Amino acid sequence: MRNPVEERWLRRFRDDNRCVTKLVCFPHAGGWANAYSTWPRRLPTDVGVLAVQYPGRADRDHDPFPSGLKTLADDIADALSRLTRHRLVLFGHSMGASVAHEVALRLQERGCPPTAFCVSGRRPPHALDGQRRFLGTDQEIIADIVRYDASRAPIFADPDLRDMFLPAIRADYRLVDGYRGGRRPPLVCPVYAYTGSDDPEVTPEQMQGWADTTDDAFRLRVLPGGHFYLRDEEAALLADLGDVLGRIKCTVRNAS
Image (cartoon, rainbow, N blue to C red; front, side):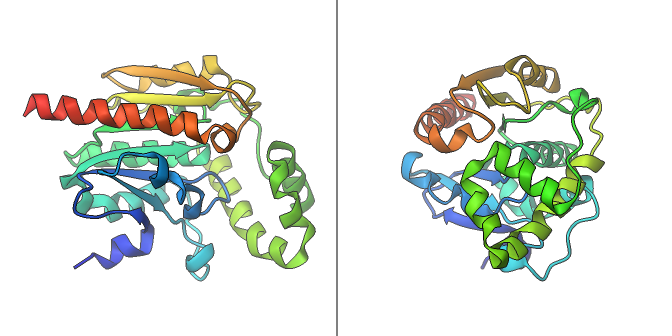
């Protein structure tokens, strides 16, 4: 019988008895869990693919937005508590990277760190000073989004869709602006970082700073593209993630 707290927070795109490794994915600001719905097709069949559904969107549109990014991380860590008996790997993109990192720290504080942490398209917490602020008028927010993700222009051209999506984006931008990061305790699991070569939000050199967030191994992979490189480069990204997950499985098996 599944836990109702898990069911409120997690969308399971593949999760059956074969899935001894659980990959939990965290969307970007304004994003929905279904951003990861295609991932099971390209990952090993023994890897569960789950995604966090943040409050205030999709089937959670009546749930209140979180008051802060750390509060959001507290709630997600609680929702994942029963899953920590499995090999848990966290993947977060953009804002989702910061949320996933805070969740990883909370799980580690509770004595059940993730097996690996995968971070994408986001500066490390100690390098957030000086990052541009995201809030503005609705028109400024829309212009900002379309500048980095032209595929969303048709959404904002439709008044009904704009009214549907904009509140969650605005709320998530507040979370991003309110999160100060800073030096955090080091993780005890390996960190795998990914970024687009032309991402205006973060340079490969800044992504390299995630090496300072772990006492374990670190590796950076740079793929072609901008901030949303992971759409056009999904095959390459998931091929690499599949290799990472395979190495994790072998490492755990050899250690047992």
